[in-house]
Length: 442
Image (cartoon, rainbow, N blue to C red; front, side, top):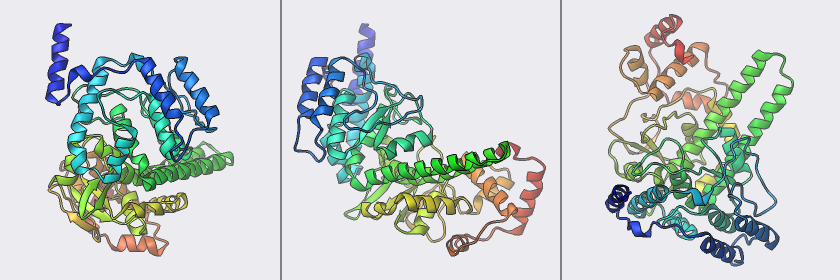
């Protein structure tokens, strides 16, 4: 036990954390704090006393937090529901949080936008202990009208975005291992120390809700089409088309809410939760000479199509970041516009996360830059390709071979901006694909 404590103390010291302060408040202290918060009326969304009393009683009775109950809304988590049992959090869990927050604070104050920092202060995201979701949920609701819904793991995109349509944000209940900077799957460090502060940026919260509403429309359209499907083949086709639409909608979310940058006072600032939950990527996203940075205006269809058609990987730092001119431009992402753009994107070639595309408003050209046609040459030459480049190259060349459906001026403008692909590439790919070279990518 002494050795274990010494190890934890050494870890705390490395991150500038006083390990004696890593002591979660007891239940009585948390209940007193919750009662005080529930009674506030100087907030944008005061809590109805009837809901507040029931909510407090749940906490008093020791019922683990699951889904926020501060109004008449709830959400169906489709079997992914979980609970935060605060008393089961270990010393290592709280220390991992404390170290991550300390590391994040060392970068956020230099790289995060002002609105995000204000949100962290408002929700008291910081300190040396994991937040009690009863308390955090009450604070979030009072300021934004959103609530938390705890989940057991990474949940399907349709469930995730359905939560957004109801103004619930899914959060996990596990904390990453000690001294782990980057994690592919969301944990408390990502969901709470990354996302929660963004709810105070009205345009970001609005975009999140709109993505949820667009997702619900896609799901409803799928349900209606399945009701008249004639056979299993048609059912499969409907499911594949639905997943494709969700894929493109997810990219809009990824490059804005998760990994967006914004211009403030002529400087690049981060607001994406995926960026700000990783101290390493926070610096990388703004300062690194390796990544590309492209200025976009989401109110322009051509820029929104740029996001929807750009493929990426989640296993490492991003290779291209998109910079919003201002948060105001995000308000243009209504559910109807999201739906229209994702339907257009289905018929167009994909860009990859390393590319600078003709017409891009480039802020920085990174050392990992590739041109739009480079992926095709490298694929046919059997040169090393990351999964993103290979996936886009095969998909695009098959799309060209099947015939592009360029039936609008908008699609034509998109295609006109791309360099032509030499005929010999198409012919060589056709022969190799027919021979089953990339059968596993079908």
